[in-house]
Length: 101
Image 1 (cartoon, rainbow, N blue to C red):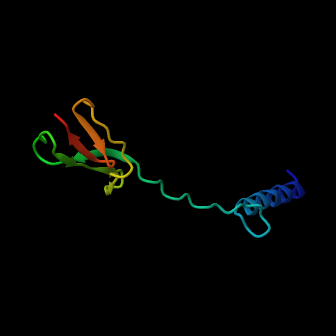
Image 2 (tube, helix red, strand yellow):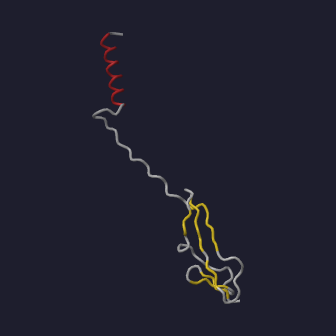
């Protein structure tokens, strides 16, 4: 191999190394860090009074979501409240159960 060919190969190798390093004049694009993911709901706990309300009584309930980052969050005002027995109970004011029978 001639001396000129070896010098040309060495120069091309250096040019490739320098261009791959992101040196001045390179076309590297800065990256933006990815923001942390928002926590997701892993469970919901509904709490109400102990026992069963009798006719004419009301009972208030709360709902709390457990989040994937370990923190609880009240979701009482975001929950949809309804009774499974509408002939006996109604839900009013978004979380108050009124028993009629």
